[in-house]
Length: 187
Image 1 (cartoon, rainbow, N blue to C red):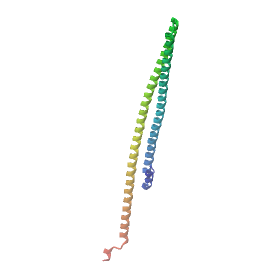
Image 2: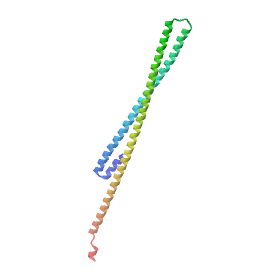
Image 3: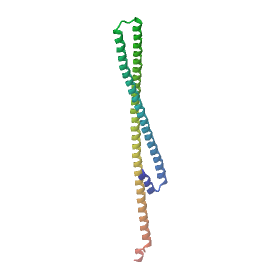
Image 4: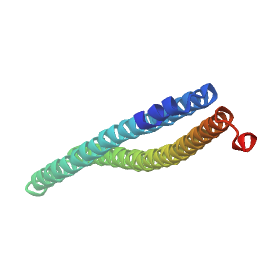
């Protein structure tokens, strides 16, 4: 970008410098928007990582509960099978099994909710990634336009300088013709 600004020295045109200031400001805005998109992507990735961790914790909790519940149920039924028991003891074991089942359902629902959240965050990452890509494309397109504009302004300045040089050369020729004695008048 500094090469673009240094070309403004060659032109001498305040209009061109003003245009370049505006264009550079617009380019800075495009860069800022690209940085914002990258920041949004980083934040979304962090949310996705937290959602993945929450899902993993929910899955681990469910699996641990299922293992513990299976062991507890086997122990209860083992005690019931080995002896004569009263009906209220059977009802008590059934109620405890019901509580274990309810906890399993609650943990399963929590896992499903965590997976849903993880999917949403994954979609958010994809959307943020597309935003970064769009911002980069817009900035790159604008950089190309700035370069084209600067190149055209530079060529225009070179043409103006060439015209000035031709005009100076023409004036010098005319002046040298005026300064030289007229050969026709002598002859």
